[in-house]
Length: 71
Image (cartoon, rainbow, N blue to C red; front, side, top):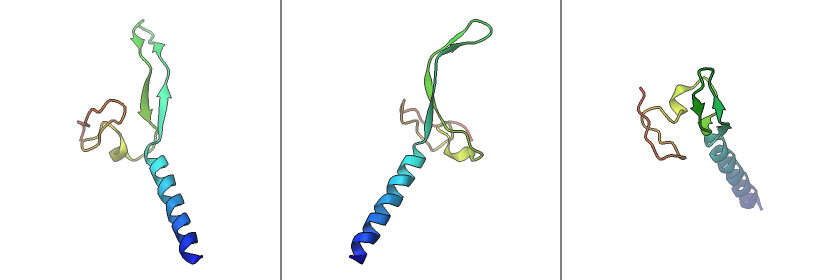
């Protein structure tokens, strides 16, 4: 019984971590003030840790497959 509880707890932690690492927000399409149209896209949720952004070197954008390029 103890093994089952520990296994379920481990699975819950892994599932929560995977969901947190894939946290992103959809940005709706809009027009800029100069009339330029910006197509809808996804971006990572805002935080103060720059290394988890898709554009950071070593990361890959799961939506487009593009690799990060910024240091």
